[in-house]
Length: 200
Image (cartoon, rainbow, N blue to C red; front, side, top):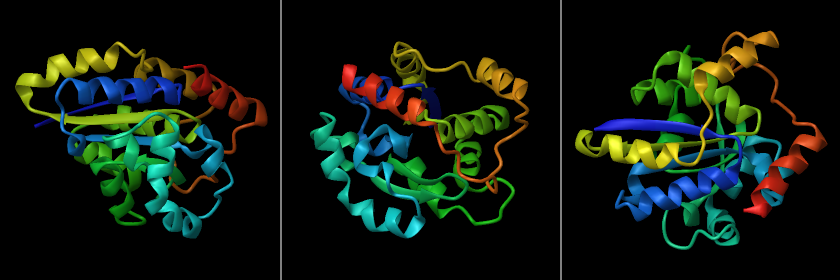
């Protein structure tokens, strides 16, 4: 098995990528999504892990609201991931990230990604991108299907982790810090995330 991960600047891009991957025959159980909580009004006010865990079972409402139906999007809910706090998530990778040992050097989402075979540099950039408003999609596939599924994910314009990491470093970022205070997007950034999603 191989894990292919991509981060999208908009939730709409990620949602379309998930739908296309599932339509290509990938089982829902092999697909994961982790999104910044601000992509949706329903979860934006959740600000602590107790509320996140309470809301974890209510994911079907979000899935239906964004056109999910059967499949991964129908199972979205709130989860608290170490280092990120409350996120909108579903799937095997999210479960790994939530279960990561607190305080481990590579815990949380970074540790789950590295454990799944994603290079360290990319795992850190992907985690930081989710913190800043992006949406991560990860798919486990057989080696023989990897190129086909990668091409599907790449059709939806994911970020380039090398370029995005360079952009972050220009602002003083060095690596994902699970102990850093939660990133709070500006109201303009939140409005942009939601506007882009509604436009799709």
